[in-house]
Length: 107
Image (cartoon, rainbow, N blue to C red; front, side, top):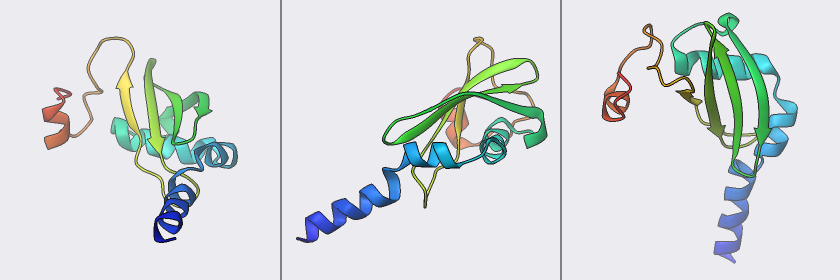
């Protein structure tokens, strides 16, 4: 019974990405992408949103460049967005470098 309740809790907190995608507006996703790209939300355009059970994927257009991004979670708890450039270039120069980005050779 405890395993069943734990599974239901996990599904409730993280398995609603499809619902989250249909209820979340672009401005909220722009904020997530802006944080990941080191800019402000008003400079981001969101395109090609889609969702599966665990994540919402989208393209963020910034400074004429396209970035593939996603975040995980559902209605209650969602992660920050993770973005990667699609043009083979590095991440935007204004982005702060941290230990995770250094480890991924993104700085």
